[in-house]
Length: 203
Image (cartoon, rainbow, N blue to C red; front, side, top):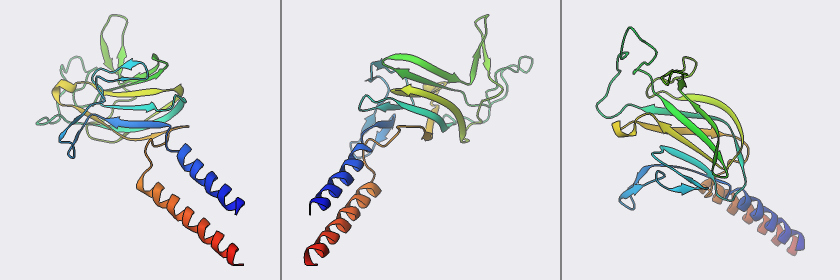
């Protein structure tokens, strides 16, 4: 019986510990509450967020790593493929979707990657090695470590652009709230353990 209780405690402990490390959220509309849910304009882990499409943060203070992320940037409503602004200066192609990703630790920016290259004369141009096409999934390898917050931004929220994070990969990234599958696994495990205990008691 003691072994059964120990096994149950260990199982519940493992599920609980995997359920409260990070949270990924977006600016979105909640049909249940009939209202907008904002990641933007919150202060998360010491950082006041401006317009932010998505954020991933530590909910228990334990840092995590972000190895890679896959995302897409959708066209603003009513937009279609745009031509290069100035054919004589093709360094900025409106047919591409621009993005910025920031990594933070203890309220300080420690990592950044974007589709823009900032030049010494104060101008920007697109990075030819990494600008996704509009509406297409794009994977960016980052290999960032020791973070407690990551934010994703599209280039023009006022124009209706929207960046959707499709996946994240890294050490220490777990769901803040257990998915239904996790609960089902936990209940199945508890049921099997209880059945084994009954059989042992009969024997």
